Structures are given as structure tokens and as C-alpha cells.
Picture 1 (cartoon, rainbow, N blue to C red):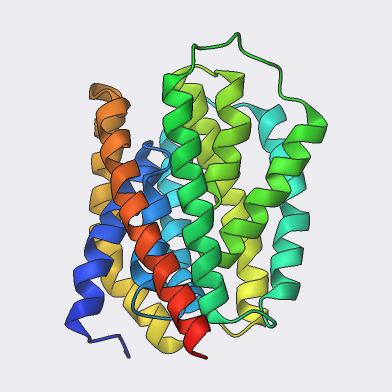
Picture 2: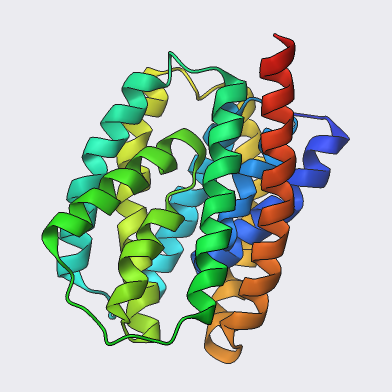
Amino acid sequence: MTIITDPLFYALAIPAVIALGLSKGGFAGMGQMATPMLALIMPPLEAAAIMLPIMIIQDANAVWVYRKDWNGRIVAIFVSGSVAGIGIAWWLASYISDDAVRIFIGGFTIAFVIYSFIGMLRVPREPSAPGIPSGMFWGAMSGFTSTICQAGSPPYQMYALRLRLPKMNFVGTTAVVFALINWIKVIPYFALGNFSTKSLGTSLVLLPLALLSNWFGFWLVKVTPQERFYKIMLIVMLVLSIELTREGVVELWVH
């Protein structure tokens, strides 16, 4: 089995996988930091390909745990929209450079962090119904960003948080949505040649840690307020994204 052996890779991959596991366990958004961390030292799409098999297995766990509490209407609307975004990302992937992807990931994540902090300061509004046009739009955005850099959570949250679902229903719906989106993404990833024996071997090595953090996330979401962890995650994401954007801009400028 061929795997990545660089110690620096694992210094970044281990916290990235833990964050991803907590995200799949119910702390929605924490996994947003996983691909940006790995993209600091490797091509972003290669990093995304390493994360995808891990995410699919974590998705299966999450769907099983939350199988009794999810909103079918939201899933149908959002996943339908995501198909268009995945298709657009598939088409563009061959035409954009790694540095451009780094800038996109960094800039998009910075915008998400700012949006999230602003949202914390707002007075809660009355819940709204899951509309079809907005769901299709944000679904397409989520499918695109999820395919390019495993960052489908921000568009999803921009849509779903306004609905003010009960906590466990929100977590369960999130699990089903991304389980479906991640399986759909397997098609373009194979077509683009992003999977390799090295990436799949590395995914397998990281899988036990991913599953442990996944189950730890299931427990945490039941006993711990999410706000404190969410704020820490946002700060880490902001720092990573600024560095990722800086690196992409510098490399593009040099070339």
C-alpha cells in the first residue's frame, strides 16, 4: 500500500481529520478547515481526494445515528440544486490552477467566517420555510464549493440556518444532505483522475482517527453547547484562510 510519508503532512492532516470527524458528528462547519489545512502543502484537489473517502464513511455513520430525525423536503431541494454545482465544478476543474483554487478556498472561507460572526450578533428571526429557488441556488453553490475544495458547508448553512430547525433535526438533515452530495462527487473525482493508490492508501491510514473523532462528535453534540467550539473553529479557519490566500496570491504573482 502506497501512502504519503511526509511528517509535515500528518502534522496538518491529524487535526484536519479530527475537525472533519467532529463536523460529521454534528458540529457543522468544523470540517471546513480540513482541506485548507492540507492545501497549504499539497494541490487542493489532491487534498480533497484524500478527504472524500473518509467523509463518505463518516457520512454513513452520521446517517445511521441521525436516521430518525431529518427533513426530506430540504434534502430533496438542496441535493437537486447541488447536482448543477458539481457539474460546473467538474467542467472547470481542468482549467483552473492550484493557486487559483487556494485563493478561492481562502477567500470563500474568510467570507464564511465574517458571515458567521455577523450572524452571531443578529437578533434571532422567526423561522422561514424551505423555499425551492433559494434551496436550489445554495445547493448549486454548495455542490460547486464541495467539489472544488470540500467546502460545501458554508452555502448549506446560509440556507439551512435561516430555517431555524430543531437542533437534532438540523444535524440529521445536514448528515443526509452531505452523504448524498459526497457520493455524487465520486463520479467527477474518478473522471478527473484525482484518486490514486497513494491518496486512497493515505485515506485508509487516517480512517481510524477519523472514525474515533466522528463518534466523539456524536457524544459532544448531545452534551456540549456548540457556540464555544464554533467560535474557536472560526478563528482557526480565519487564520488558515488568510495564509492560504496569501500563498496563492504570492505564487500567482511570481508566475
